[in-house]
Length: 199
Image (cartoon, rainbow, N blue to C red; front, side):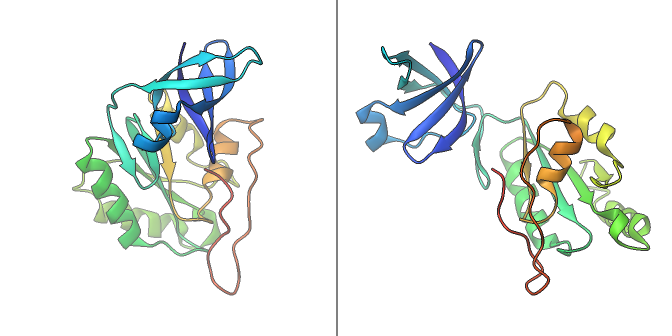
């Protein structure tokens, strides 16, 4: 059977198929010879108990090391304007890595409602990235701003959402797909960054 790796749990892999999800372990030679990533297309066989064994990994169209994911076409790069403050060095690193791998990049500036001049600040950053060729979206997961625009960029593509902890990736995904109910975290007042909640 064929499927796509949806989640990784230590040595177990949740494989998404047209018939539903199957929990699999890799065949012994795969455990020692290669790493299997979320997004990998794999061939697996079913055991009598309904679990599976990954037999092979198909060739990849793309592979990112940060975040570690295979076969995506688009990177939704999320940064926040406030709490935590935008880290442009991180944005540049992930954007360059993505573009180097031939992936489309969309920069989402979240939490624009948290600053008095949030829209103006988002516009300034968008202008600074004006020559990069990738779109910049001003958004607020709390107020629903920019959600339809992000949803439009996701449509018909296999995408990954990347960004530092606390920037609002889970909140944006919950707003994009109501009912998803991903766990969200808070940002530390002391350190100014969030807790890791979603991969």
